[in-house]
Image: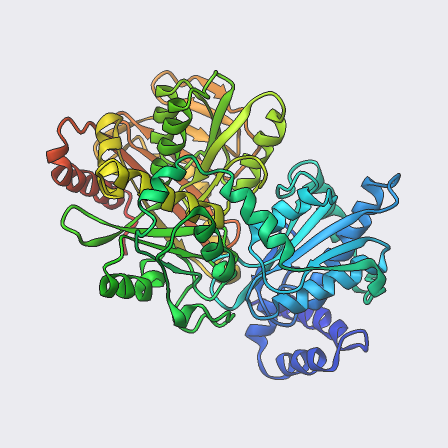
Length: 580
């Protein structure tokens, strides 16, 4: 680190030694100044960025960490923008929820106090609640905004602060950029802490019943559940917010045999039984799988700390429990929803689904079969929520999802909802069983009926300042020098969402992309494969998404075709030299 940079960081850190900051913070900052230059730099070399979704970062002291002061400046900036955007409104309301992470309750109460000090009414939950319930709460109480304190599925060292708008979706343009400006202009001296309690209303379990009743209203096969109510379901909240509401929703749907994982029902921000509370990682469901084997369960489901993502395991044709990826679960859900809507005669050309650009194309194939419109949006459920808002009163949203284990049905929630998803996944299992199939066999049927798509993901982690620079360099190299072929198949299209254009590599013609700017690249190959590359917006990593497909002419050939697609993905990875 250059001497000038260290000196700048030290001067910045010394500002955190004044009495505006509490004694514990001042003590920790002084220790870093005296004894740990490297960590001092990481904590202060930049301000924790309030991005288009809010804050997310490591917890600790400093401008580049999640703490009551960075949360405070973010909240003061949000309050200032709300007072400006709704200047003619006397009772601006903001709903707040938080998850089980360390400091989540503290950050939530800090935000509530600041909003109250600015004359804004606050509705805050009395204990941890799922993120999708916060989205519903905003709409139910006609709030102007919402905040949820969570770092979703990140490791225990992280926390975050997500902001929602009055439609119940995460903030998007123009509000995201406007709030970012307000937060950037806010200093610690401007923050109004500790507002009056008279502006704060505590929400309790009455809202739990209202929310889960809405989820029950989505049921399309109550008779199938009634006939198969004893399906054995193992569920784990992985120490998070799903602990109460997922079992409650399953019981309201009619399921009677729900098995919990006692060690993971404990709400603990240290996530003691897992390395990472991410249901995308197989190890996070190990305890649930062990219990399922012991009890002979048919279905395993696990949700992340804020209960907006769910991972599942089902039994294959050999009765072995296997994990499904997010694309496979999305295919099951979307197929089921469209099939049942069609069966009920409810499809009239005014329905649609939405998926993200890195999610399996099989969802679009299914939609086309049922003459249902589909939309592709950038990664992030806020873009799905925006489509729902734009189509309100004109077209009906049936369902949607993203490959990263997030799904939604209906329009009363405007973010991915694992509580809802668990209820519907269990219903699909009951319906499949009613038709003499397992979920796994239903998935094979879908592949045979449409196309057999297989997807995979590699995340390359690059931590700290140097890691961020390395990720930026990797993206620039792929963008300025795109490969001509990958795995002996020509690159025929390059979608550059940062430049908002598609380049036809054969004709060299350029076509505009009608989506917001995003740092994403996609290479489409002549054989139908697709490779997507994007830096994570919430973690220090760059992600590579792979999608390949084939025709499954005979269901008996499924295993051989599956291995062939796995081999094809591995060959693409080797061709791009992404293995260490």
